[in-house]
Image (cartoon, rainbow, N blue to C red; front, side, top):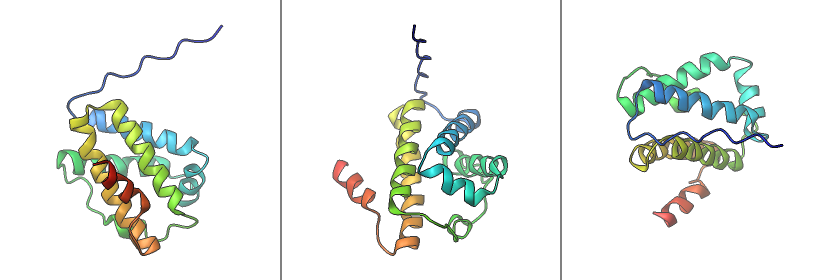
Length: 142
């Protein structure tokens, strides 16, 4: 006998710190389990996942709520990414999109997705010297 699937969360039409925290923790739980992303994050964080999660909640609360809790330079914080390929960026953006779409209505999810694309685009350009392919795909679908 198969277990019933847990109910899908009802997409929320507002964002607050609690919902952002749930989003960040759920997203990074999947990042850790992801065969492509997990090893890169594990190598970069050296077991400091809790501190990373706190920083990411601060970052996203700054982006979405204007809290100004995050004051670091994103590009500097990610300056020494080792073993990262274009596929990592596409996987990260795709996973973020899935999580935001599951948890929020389009009016809330889309600005979060646009912010994630901006971060990914800047880091990708820094790593590879050109715009990411997922940017072209996004422009085609807009």
